[in-house]
Length: 362
Image 1 (tube, one colour):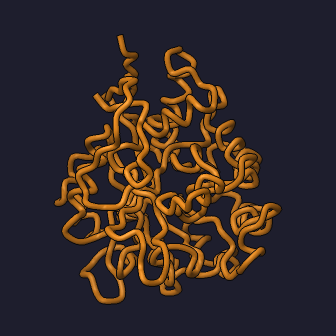
Image 2: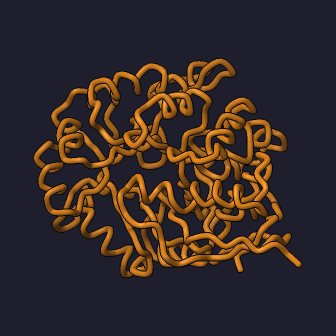
């Protein structure tokens, strides 16, 4: 008999639902893989850079974008968080008003031109010690960070000794943490041993991190061997020592600092005129990929200890850090080899590589 794994429905606390007519398909793919809630990133065009009010050509509001997601099927989620995109126009008064209204639960830092639709980002050194970050800290808004140093090129950007991410976590994050000791932060989609070390050296309950399926499963070798461009995402997949550090972090018994955030990013065209679109679409198959990663890391998902480790990462740690309940509903996965499927007409990590999943949603 196939082994059935049953745990509370999980929360994807870093994903992209984008905009336009396909949003309902992206949300449907999430719901069908047992997802109870999501944090939908604000790097739309234009960005979600206001708290409320009407949309304009310069920025959407949390109120309107969240409303659009709810109408597209997001009302079936138990939790739906839309962070505020921090831009040069963001003020401390915006933060205070948004927090008091209950609409602002998280804010997102993007390095300038560091990833998709991040041109509105402001360098991290401009934020440290600023009135905006002081307001985020004082009002207990969670700061979500895309942790890469901006403006690097060539070997400074990606090398076996250091990368844009490792430089960011070694040079800037300690300064940010020391300047704002009360700030609650999520280090998003971490990929390096340096980022793991920073999170684990920080005060528990103040600093946490999301990790994607692809960064637990693959290294840069998988990307460049045969040029499997469907694995191209930002931050880019890294080296074996980095993958091992991530695996050890998420599988450590009783850990509470690391949780699921797929960074699932739909692109209808992966190859574009200006290069390869960054992002892996894992809607419909993320829990299965996470289960495969845990098993590759040596976790036995047929044992109580293994199930607890997986449950913490997928279903419990994220809600506990953000301050909402773990889902009372459960979902099931069965050990069964099956090709990946999805409803949304987008390029996908598994289908693009012809990957067979080891687990299936029941």
